[in-house]
Structure formats: C-alpha cells, structure tokens
Length: 128
Image: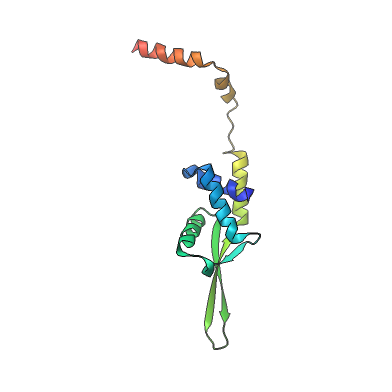
C-alpha cells in the first residue's frame, strides 16, 4: 500500500491530485489486486477500466492477454491488468530521493528573519 501511495504521489500528485485523493485511489487499486499482481479485465466496470487506463498512462499498470483454444476450435482471449512492480519501485525511489538535487545553500534562506524579507521589499517599493 505504501509503495502504491508513493508511486501515485510521484505521478498524479505532481499533476495536482491531493494527498487524500492519492490515498483513496491507492485503496481503490488495492481492492482489486490485494496480494496479487494481476486482475482479470472482465471484473471491471467501464468506470474502473477508465481509471486503469489512466494508471496505465502513468506507467503503474500494464495489460497482457492469454489465448486459450476451446474444444470447439474457438479461440478465447483473456485480458489482464498487471501492476508494474519495477516501475512502482522506481517511482517510490523518486519519492525518497526527490529529484536527486539538493541545494546545499537552501538552509541560508531559512535562517533569515522575516522582518529582513519585508524590509527588503519595502525598500524596493520606495525606490521605484
């Protein structure tokens, strides 16, 4: 569950989805998959499928199919949705590492008192 939340945070969260929506979506996804990595497509409603297509676009899910020959010679195709574990792991790593860049001087701005910032803004406005 934590990995799905992290992966969603690094995809849909960056597109404006709130933390609460991310957690709700993660629960929704896991309600289909549980401890499995595949879900058969025919259990999904069209609304579920729309969500799964969106997750496929984000790289979290993919599809696969198998073909079975029936006794009467007909071909039966079964479609599955698959959690992309390797991609989810990569997205989780991105969440932990950020973008890989850490500004070694960022702490300087945190140490500057608020009145300095307001004074600097006031001085600039008076000079224009």
